[in-house]
Length: 367
Ligand code: IPM
Ligand code: MG
Image (cartoon, rainbow, N blue to C red; front, side):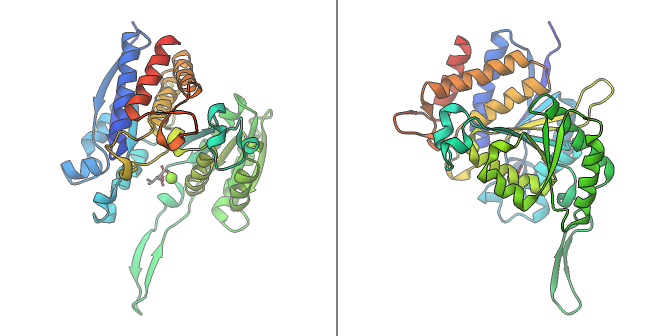
């Protein structure tokens, strides 16, 4: 028996709770079926932590996440915490956990499942078969750059400012992640920047060229972010791996997500640097938010969370066969015509969050 996989669950707020409940059932099934053995622990993040401790993330929770082999997070935020001070907002918990765990590489795949090609707002032939990977830098750039703040000038006007800064090591390490992924995929990397305006991304572009020299089999191209946004909706299938800065990645990944029909389908992985034993900190989460408007009503689509678990099996535990099995169970569920409201189609069977979990479990058992 191999060692138990230490997994920390952070359900968070809103639908985070409900989608985590479905993942717990799948983990329990995997243990029973002998696929893997897990040691689960659980913590609070976001509004849930604000309510309990007055802060969106405690030092104890950070320590527990660092001690785990992998973290699986739901979602944070909601109108309930709209009026808490900026530095205590639920989102600050998420930004802190990324920074404290050193999760610099955010992998956001956008895959169109054949059964959902009609669910996109774009034409079927534009999106059918889409399989792109957005690699977003996650612990640097304008999200964390100093100085930042809001100041009052002598004349009484106010000034708000942030700093977009990248260093060569930061750019090279995210570049390597993108190229390593491309080697195993379509062997193409598109780096997205704004090098016609911003010096920090002139450096970004130059450093991506440096990294590319180590990967003679991978073709590197560059796009300005405005053009990249346009190309994503014009002809998304031209892309294989896209690598970009923290803020551009935030924006482009929402755009790419909608190509697939629903934010409710997309998982993500946030990875740190590998240590001497090859172990890396990792956090997995659905791309969707906490959707407070539908929370607690058994309406949320748990598939993004379930697919985040599949990413965890693959990237943190090298359990590729188990990940394939789980992803195939999701595909079989969609092929059977089971749908939550966000991906509902004419003639399909509408289910709730738990019903979707039931269907995936049924197909897992049959796989
Ligand atoms: C995301 C989210 C976060 C981000 C917010 C909630 C801080 O939009 O993960 O894409 O901007 O990174
Ligand atoms: Mg975002």
